[in-house]
Each structure stands twice: as C-alpha cells, then as structure tokens.
Image 1: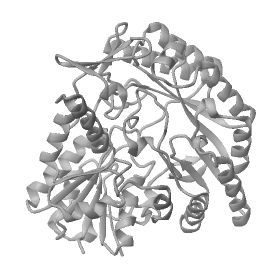
Image 2 (image 1 turned 90 degrees about the vertical axis):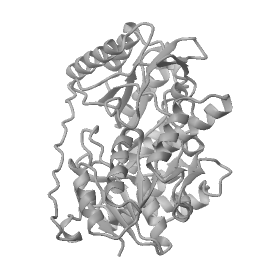
Image 3 (image 1 turned 180 degrees about the horizontal axis):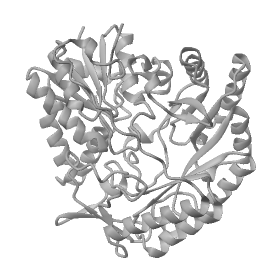
Length: 492
C-alpha cells in the first residue's frame, strides 16, 4: 500500500477560487480509496502562500508520493509545487495529471505525425524534467500504474487504452471523494440555494476550432453515466450535505439523447425527497428545443449557459460553431419563453476578428438581452485546432481557417511561467496573446473592454466581484493538526 498526497494547486487567475470543486482529482481519490489506498488531499485553492503549506506538510509527514492535477493556467503553480517538494524531499515521486499534460501530449503526438519538433514537444519534454510520471487522459484507472513506475508517460488519452473509461466504468466507479475537501468552504449558489457541481457525461463531439480537447479523445469522445447513477449522486449530495442546488458541468447536456429521461427522473427524485431543486447547466444552441426547455424548467433548471461565442456570421463560420446567429437567437427566445435565464458565453480574438465583428457581437447581445454574459479574450490552448494546426513563423505561430483563409497570430507562451494569458478580471484585467490582420493584441483587449462595459451598462448586469486570497499561518513544527482541515484532509 502506497500513501499518496493529492494536490489541487491554487488558481489566482480566477475571481473566486472556491466556487467549483476539482471533480477530476476527487474521482482519482475515490478510485484509490476503493482499492484500500490511503489518501491525503491538500486543497490549495485560494491559499496565497501555498508553498508554506507544502513545507509544513512535507516536514510533518512521511509521504513520498505526490499527485498533482493542473489545467493549463495552473501549470506554473504546479511546477512551483513540484520544485518545492523536491527541495524538501529529494526522494519523493511526483505525478502530474489533468487537462494540461493531457492536451499538450495530444498536441505532441500530432506534431510527431507531421514530422516536426515544435512547442508541444518542447513543453512535454520540460514537464518530464519537472515531474517523474505524466498521466495523460483518464486518471481513475491509470493512477495505479503511475504508482508502480518511477519514470515515464502513461497515455490514457487513447480510446484503445485499457485505462480509457467506457460507459460502464464511468457509471460504476465511485463518486468523487468530496469528503476529502471542505465542502462548506466552497460558496456557489443557484437562485439563493447553496449548490455543488457534478458531471453526468464526458466529452463533446463538436469541432469548435478554439476549444481545447477537439483533438483529444479524453475530451472529445462522449462517455455517459447511467441516469440512475446520476440520480444516486444527487440523492447522496442532498442527504449528506443538504444540497438542493446543482450545477451540471457537462459540456453540452442536450447532446445526450436520453436527456429528457434524466430530467424526468430528477423530477421523481424531488417528489421522493419532498424537495425542490434548482439546477444550472450548458446546452448546445442549435440542438435546443422547446420540449427540452420545458422539461428542464419542470426539473428545476432556472439557468442555462451557452457558448454562443460571437454575434458575427463569419466568425461563427471560422470557428466551426455549427450554429449561426439565427440558431443562437432562437435558443435565447426558447429559453425565455420557458422562464429559463440565459448566461451567454462570448469570446473575441478569433481568426478574422475585426472592429466590425466585435461590434456585431455587441449588437447581438444588446438585441437578445441575456440575463448574464461573459466575454473573454481567446487563448490558444493545446488540444485545440488554433494551437495544434498553427504553423511556426519565427517567434510566433499562425493558424489559418480552412474555411475562409482568415488568420490568427499567436505569441509564443511559456506555459510553465506565464499566467496572465488566461481569463482576467472583466473590469479591465485582460491580456491578449493573439492578434489578427485587422486588430492588434492591444486593440482586441480594448474592444473587449468596451463591449463589456457598454453591454453591462445597457442591460444593467453588474460586474462580478473577486474574493481576497487566504493567508496560511505556518504550523511551526506543531504537526498535522496545525494545517486546517479546509486545506488538508485524509482518508479514514
């Protein structure tokens, strides 16, 4: 038996780090516990001086195996964590999993097929210098192999891999080990109800060129849990924590052909529990129907989120969104007809972006009047066509739309150090690492900021407010009990 410490890095690029729990690493934790392994979990979300926590933990524990999850924006913090552990315990083995290493490794494989050695190959090479084992793709089964080897890459991001989850495994594996985090410290509400996130399905089959995972089976191939397993998770979350609010973090709920069956079972669960739920989730606009909307409202949905992305037809064509402006307008109308509030997820900085296309996006928002919206500057993520299909040109990269020939230029980003390329504060806190033939990086940010302020003002939608980070106080050698349990929890 190997005791392992799983680590959630901080995410200071977010407005509030304790909103949604990191479901992936909690699924790995529950998989380990189901096989009798002992797990410690350090949740460093929102901890300003997170390396001090690591120092206290390593000095007061004999754990020599560490597993870190990281999205692309978290990678600099994951690297700092690994380096801190190394400085305190040179014998430790450090495993890296999560979206970044999965998608960068996927991009690396595509580079190798093209016979080139470029940014993905270089990034993976650097990751192997910092971390001992890289786990790419599903971690629930591959973690056991990662524990057995000293060095290497485990590629579970392959539908032929024995570690790639099928529907039955996704259904039967234990629920996320939420007991290993301080659930009460996560503050997320839907219509005034204290709420929690869950995942009912994995993967999205669509082709959006800006979206990471389009070239990765891990995030592209749909894997479905049975409706009954989803209902059981909802029941236990209500029983164990009292939750009546639930955020479905599936890519697109209405891709599931049995979605309305799930909605009917959610209705029956509420009747059984004599409770009323409030739900929130993502839908694909061109697949959204009046029947779906009506059933969603009946089941307790009050909010839907949709990645409309742009109000310009050419941009929608360039990003291969599969929906046009009419589809998107119709989806908002259906939602409003059925008393569902809409959060429009928008982005600027796509191939071919110009003053005119951003103006069209602003005007579309003002026309359809969503209840909330989010507008970000595009980031070129590994695993997306924007990243994977870009061609190196001296010190930058160029993606060319196969549909219109419009181009997107991208700066070289050091993913192990740069953190400001990700989503910023909506009140003037963005940086752009992309530009087009019509707009410079600075102009893209300025136009995004102008759109944000004008739309929020005219639709009377307030800015979200950020929360301050938590300062951890050193234990000064007093042992594990001195690390508060909202940071450190362990298997019983």
